Length: 283
Image (tube, rainbow, N blue to C red):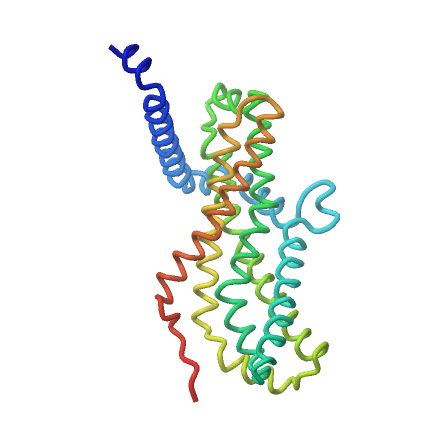
């Protein structure tokens, strides 16, 4: 009967199989993410040394990457130039309608709510996430993960839980550096390059910089780090096909994590600020 259906409706059968495979993949992701979250307390209790080592590796890098400071320098430079770009575009655009004095507002509003979180998430995915996928993928194809299981070491808490926990801890100082770099770059571009009065810039910047927005921005960065690390550890943990398969896993993980970064930004912004933005520009 199945052969008859497949021979008569081959396209329908192929679509049904693709849908079934997609549902299986979603379920596999969900189970792994639940296991990763459940393994974090065990990783914190039993694998503290490994977690601390991963925090140092994530923040400052190892080997050749340590020469340039690892993720700290990469995220710092990304947000530095992003903040400068916001100041340049904001000053030029606002100057067209004669309100270039509001560039300080533009910096306080865009950097905190959009630019710094998104740029930090992209830097996190390209450095910490891709490195975790490559490490776990190399361990999988060389059967090191299987060796851990034979030694009665649970691989998910030791390899995945520690990396997710380290990423969430390391993102806090990294994101603080990113926000400061974006603020400094925006002020430098506006005051030094464009010659706007420092008092005017500081007035509008401090007026429209809401402290609660910074706190929510940090929460957004932590959720973003959680999503990025879980996605990258999943693809690395289940990599297959030798070195080529590891490269494919890294590419798929980066692609998925970039989508997750933008999705997390959208959902958290809607949840916190709503459709109105929780903002009123009036005298």
